[in-house]
Image (cartoon, rainbow, N blue to C red):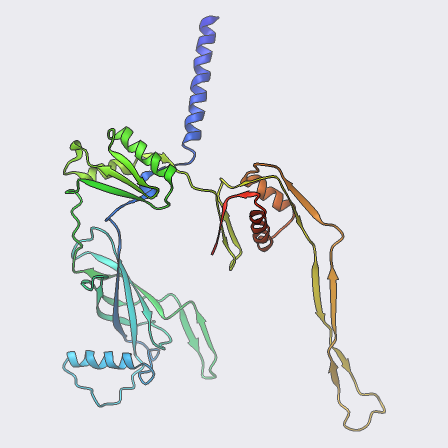
Length: 376
């Protein structure tokens, strides 16, 4: 019997440990998904160019001087002198060209570019972007873009002037339309230390990252500089091979933690609440006041013996009905209520997103909510 109980106790202990491990990894995330390496980032490129080949949907040159000047300069580079002439083409449009240069992108690689009309062009459908240099923030050219534009929207119209527009035909995209001409120098393997920047700064998450790295790589390898930064010293075993160290670090799983926060977008009525939101004991009541305004115009017809010239008239009549509701519901939230309790209590009131925004703001104003509210 003692052997049986010992064996049973080991099984129970293994089950408890397994449950604890599952619960501990319930909110686990890879370090790769919560940080970025300082210096390893994308770079924004931008340029100005011309789109040609439009079917009469381009810029009106008399209304867009920059398009006309750009077209004249382009033709002069091709050996065509058009100064002093009256250009009236509608097949050209001035556009801005943007792209994102990834980190460690090499010369000759291709990238996607986006194109947007600057003037009064109606559509870029069927147009081709002429060779356009793309500049970085330092003023240097890092890529050149060119190619036919793919447009997701369209515009159609008839001789009567009626038009139908779907999407935004003045924005377009060129897949692999840019060629990288210049690289951004960054010697990763020569670094003696790297810094990991948290995408969502939090001191607890940063501490968990440092502890995981020290446990895996070695003591005193990582330290927390601030809630958004973890400094990593390159150990001797990874000297000259920083990329391998980062590859090992990225796969480590850590527990993330974020402050209690509620994000409200009043324009769309969207509400996002974190799981750490807590509510103290509070009662919430929602009134059922409904105001209805009804327009019921009366039509008065002339009588049988009405004088000549009498006409039918319409007399406006407005009915206003106020319904305060026979019953007012009250929801009680007990102390230390969780997000689940909060949502269940507010759903019991039958409130919609707009009312929920007001209720949350009033709970916060009363001091009963232990969370931060951000309004967008």
